[in-house]
Image (cartoon, rainbow, N blue to C red; front, side, top):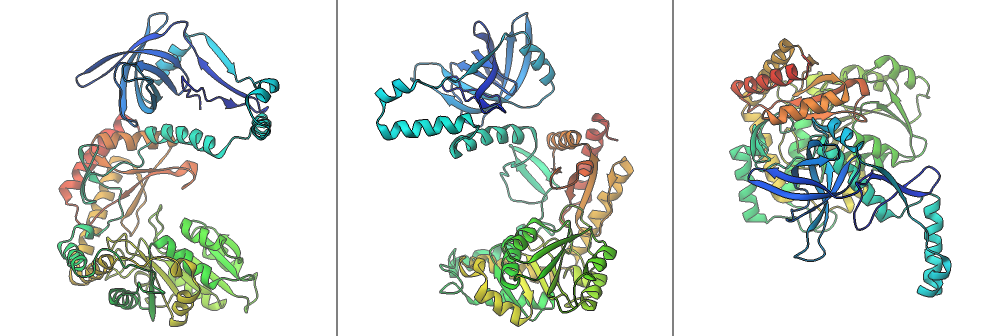
Length: 549
């Protein structure tokens, strides 16, 4: 990046390994002022770059503040700028604060670039100090260290700390332009508060709204009063509680399995089971759109990993035929795919697995509580309830809590208990989490209207978006991809919807293909039709303004 610190210029490394940085330096400080609300604070621009500028201001601001500036450049060129404060320096309390501002990509970005052309361009190159001076200033050991540092810098190698600083600036720029890591100031519910504004939540995984269900919250509160806030140890030693055992038995029955074991997250559950059962020589066949935790878990083993095109039974069968019947094989698929929202053809995959003597593992994270006549997930939805060899589910989506679980045979669970490092060396889930998950399963079984409302809302939102002219994929889950295609338009639509009071997430590369950039829209059972109509109005305004519909 071209962001420079006035007191410590951070130069780039050119492709030839020489340290250099480019910036535009005015002959004299330029006038500007920080505006917004009741603010009208004069400041001076010291230097500017493609992505940011350095100013002296009479007042200081917290790091991370978003500021609006009115800047004047030579030739009577002026422009309005939006920027984020990424560093600051103040020598004395009475001295002006030197602020490093990272520009956000807004409507007057082009005007800013034109304004830069009015300033003379200069290039600084950091000169190595003479070795003779270094000998006088430092000891022999420090001289050697400095020499090695300069030698690596000439090769374009930087220290880890400098690399982190550089990446931090890049991420500030990226986060400021794209709607990620927004801070919620309320519970994750149908309506949330972020940035001091209430918005309709269409970007979460709390599909049934159980994080706010009175019975679920009451179970957690009562358990904290009885058991405390933590388990106090790993499960192998003193951390196993009766609540863990009760939840494991309940989840095993809910998924039609013999036994179950709890892990701290769905990611850990996938990682744990694969690390415990896979060995060198085993063959793993992954759907290419499987979750990252599955891919990471496979790569942590010595097994041979193969991928087949998304939900392609023909290619899966062809790959299975390449291996002997007795060769250990494992087929892995998501139940509901997290970005597309579609469902794996589990019945057909199970038939292929049986015919080729392979085991079948299903990651049911986004399906548990969401699909199937009673919300038991993909196997129930596909008519093969209880038949997959391994089912991994999470407690953090449909069940509204946190944690993961592995369901399968007793021999599988016993192997994980004694061979899985993520299980052995991780503290047990807090008892309140177990109690809330147990209460959530009770609610799913006793209140079938939740599942009915969820799919009513999904159908209503899908029909509304389709009628507006959006490209929407019809899925049986709570996830609806709204395909935009162009990356910049996708981010622009998400940002405009955020301003209009709708919380959605933009998904681009590398999570999806470049021509399938999208908004990942997800509904909740607790949304009202009025909530969804209000969201549709925002989609209509934003889509027409950006010429998407």
